[in-house]
Length: 327
Image (tube, rainbow, N blue to C red; front, side, top):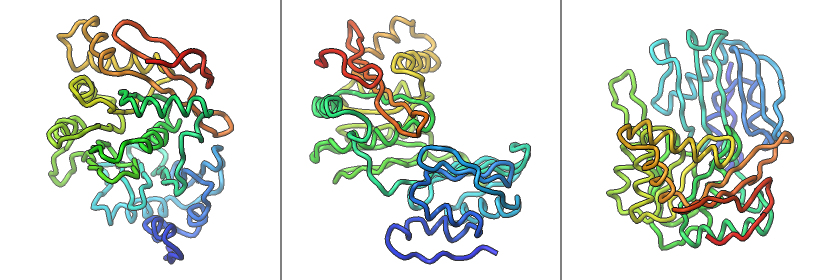
């Protein structure tokens, strides 16, 4: 039987949505602040990411896994069943849950919960003081920045750290698939996309939210991640007066990120030539900051690529400042 874990302080209350619904075998992992993710494979195999490393920590019954998923989704008004076997949801404390059940998950229900960290990470947690100074200057100069990296590299965390240097008199609008950004800023509007549901709720896409955000008088737009048609709208916003806007993208390097952005634009602006796309991207994005996760679990800024209308050049390689950083 699941047991209720009573909150002892404000931080524990933030995790009560999880704790009140997990069984005893999972409960202990939500008390450990060193655990960033909790995963269950094939309905029973429990894994955790602790201090950046994956550990297999035990097993639970598949029925408990399914019950945990359903009970966690219940307060959110979301559901998972055979007609909708995949769900991606934000919990009340900011943690992100992704769950898949059969028949899509062949070996049994699986779930991954990326926990929201109570500790705020700053730029100094990602890089050296000279590169921190460079990133601060880029924010002050209102450069349009794209943060790239692999999955779980720390893109959103770095983006959140960059937002710590936003001017307090700016109006910021964030657009995300799943709201993860936590900006410590007095003037923020947060928008979150919504998938279509079996109950008949229509999809509200990231692209439609970018267009809506442009009518809400933003000084800066922050798009959690670009991976589809919203790329074109975001670049247009960056190129039409919304300087200092930012986003993230999955890529293996800063130059790969640039190529991926161009490919996404070509997919959704088929009548544009590659030369036009290249010029449009170069006039919209001023810098790409690439973050990487290392084998020991640490995360750091590895590359910074500056872009202008006529050239592009690296100012940071392998985590080191290598040339004059004027842009």
